[in-house]
Image (tube, rainbow, N blue to C red; front, side, top):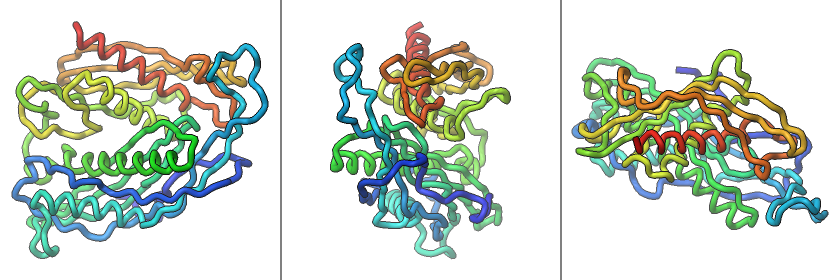
Length: 357
C-alpha cells in the first residue's frame, strides 16, 4: 500500500490560474445514517484504527454571470458571459475523523464493532488519498472519496489491501446557501458510497469468507448492474481526473434511469446470492476535435461492453458522443471533462435499448 508521503492527501482540487476567491463556504459532512453491512460480514468483528490523511482547506470553481449582454443570436437562458472565480471551502472537522466515524458507526449498528483490537477478528487501518471536491467543470460539484484500506486477519496475520472509491455529482448552485447545501450533500453521498464500496468489496468478501467470488444479483428476479471505470487506450490523452469523472457520471445517470433494480460501484458484490448480475466496462479509444470559444467540440469515442458473465456478452458497441452547442464552454477550463456527461448519456441510452431486446 502506498506510504503517506507518496500520496496526495488533498481535499480538492482543482486550480484555475488567475481566479480570485471572493467567499468562503463551511461544510461538515457526516454519514446521515449507518450503512447496512453485507450478509458475509455477519458474525465478524472489526477494530478500526486511526486513519491517516486530511482534507483540510479546499476550493471549488464557480462561474459568475457578467453584466454585459449576450449576442442576439443566443436563445433565452443561455449565457456565455461568465467569469470564473474560486470559492474557498472550510471543513469543520478533519476528513480522517469523518471517515473513521462512518466506519465505526456502521460496524456498531451492524454488530460488527469490536471493543478493542485484542478481541477483534480483524483490524482496519486506512490512508486517505482524497476526500473532497475533485477536478470538474464549473457546471457541477464533483465530490470524491479515495482511500486504501488495510484489513489484518488476527487469526493468520495476513494483510489485505483494498482500494475504496466513492463519487457524487450534483448540479452547481449560484446562491451561497444553496451552494453550501449542495456541496455538503455531494460530500456526504461520496462518503456513503466510498464506505459502501469497501464493505461490499469482492476482495473483502474473499478475505473474510474465502470462496469463489461472483458479482451476485439482488434477489430472485432482480438485476444488479456493476459499473467499472473505463480503461484508456495508450494513444489517448485525457485529463488525469477523466476516468473517475466519467465513472461518477455513469453511476449517477444509471441510478437515475432505473434500468436495473440496483446499480453498484466497481468491485462491489450485491448482498443476495440470487438474481441477474450485469457488468458495464469499456475502453476510451479516441478524443477528437478542439474547443474554440464555444464553437468547437471534443468528441469522445469509447468501446463499451455489457455482459452477464465473462462468457456471455449482452452488448458490445463503439460509441461516439460530444456536448451539444449550449453546453460547450469558452473558458480556460475547456477539456474533455466537458464531454463526459454527453458520453454517459449516450451509454445509458444504448443500455436501455439493449435491455429492451
